[in-house]
Image 1: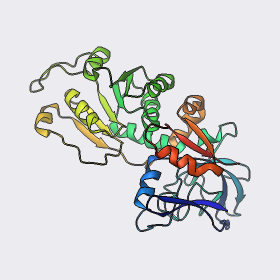
Image 2 (image 1 turned 90 degrees about the horizontal axis):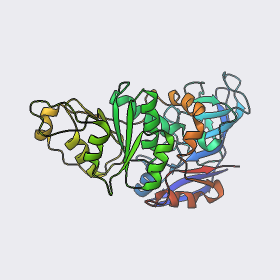
Image 3 (image 1 turned 180 degrees about the horizontal axis):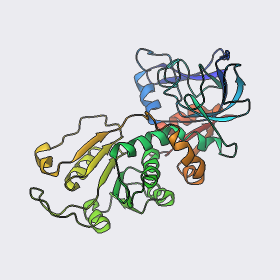
Image 4 (image 1 turned 120 degrees about the vertical axis):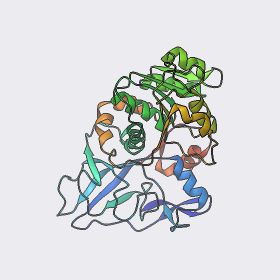
Length: 339
């Protein structure tokens, strides 16, 4: 079968590899869609993921169809549509340093257990939407980490897939008002369609002033200088230093700043100026419990989730898809589809 593998720094190849087989406790899944994550480009740039330098199968946002079920497996049958917990694959993280990757014709889930390695979804959910399950779990974990409460006023920086997923996540947690900040007009349009209450184009608007207009002014607190927007939670899904500067300068006393974006360089923060705000900073990585928590929301709101996808490219053009996704500003969410 064919599989996309990192073969050196900056290089991926579609190789012919041996197709896996299913044992009594395993499930064999034919890939139907797999999304491209920014980390795929990062892994490729580095030449792999230590200790698997130069031999890393790619693809960790998969959805597929069950084609074989081991005799000891319950909760799955041939023909089932499934989403996969790539952090629970027993032969290493699927597509992130493990033995297999989602950009392959077929994968095997070893020691497969329903609700742990996979979950069955309704047949009517489009494959490319099902492939959003993994990034939506990343976004949901980020919203959960902030501890947002019903009625909270939220600011999401970055209207990429994770930021848009966070909008859905905050709304699911009962947010009272969600503002999305970005510099790309069509991304902001998507944010509104998905459910954001307002958007701010930080390229031509004063973010601080607009937040005061949208969320009001926080009550004055001794030691916190100047007026601050009455926003409760800020989420960085952009990874730009300006986001941290904006959020920390705007934060009212007791606000929370969540960071799910990857910052590739150190960011300077003036903790002296922040001390009296008692700002809570939380970071978010992966999805310890959220991978299948978001599945029900995707099933219920798949038409909104579908808006996140910008490009659908067939597997026979996977190198083109990887190049497109790695080009800044060229695409928002690229999903590779399989026949």
